Image 1 (cartoon, rainbow, N blue to C red):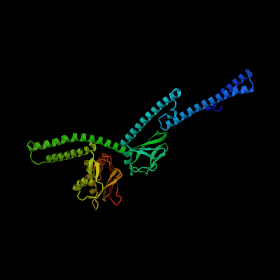
Image 2: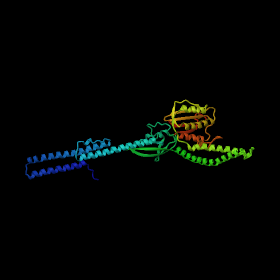
Image 3: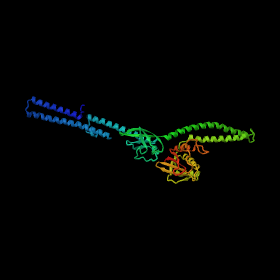
Length: 427
């Protein structure tokens, strides 16, 4: 295999060749002029010395230019955009190289500004998304998270933590969530690798499995409710109208005014029809939940309203003063849940507690009643263990809380018999 040659080796070869040719010419001149040794030396030595000096100077000048250009490229690699290393060359080919270098430097600086602006936009856009996203550095440390990701954690402090610390592991080419993790719910994780400043980063997007199931469930029940609303209303409205007309005709004498079985049946039909119409109207509210209209409210304001409805409710004191919520929707959810807590029985009234944990408001409701009879059907619409229950209260309460970006959980009371209701809302 031929040995690789450098530019310096080629330059030295040509310099040796020129020196040899000059020396040969001087020797030939001395021989042809028939000069003695002293005259020959006087002719050859000055020419040889000056030529050698000029050739060595050319060699050093060429290598110096290359060295300066290398330093200039190193400076460009370190984000220095000036050309002071070649400043003494004001014309000629080197000046042209300087001009080309300045153009290249300007273009790189412009592209870098565009890259920085694009990166800032992407990070800002990711921060605005209501989808949990985390970026890991090459060492799998948390590099960037958006607020939605922090809201999905039990503890929002992630500084200095790795993906493994949060309960995320990389197995068989995909990221997975461990059984014991920092997250409040289960997620499907999608990953994407990108390069930044020559280093590999990984962007993880978390898709809520529970939220997707809840969304699908909600869509199914909304469609069912719309069908029920349409069909039941179409059937009951004429029945209700006819029963009223028959009673009016009876009162006006068109039908005998003596009490009879027909009149009693008409009254029953009317009352049941009205009850079913009210029943359908209440369920229609579930499929037409408006968007949350958040505003700053005080916990004292909410507590006073709850005291007015439930004088026996125990509300513990808290340092939390203000929060941003849809007052009407939060109040409706709390009323449903507190009403359930009272109906659960127990030898003492329910306890309501407000807390602030990191960037979340935690509302805890405890009762010492009979507990959760069938946890699998807690949020199944139309299912109820109560004799007169409609089976919609918990479903609507969960949707009212979720509509404000919060979560609703029903657990066994950790302090004894009964149920623990936990509502978490972004502060």
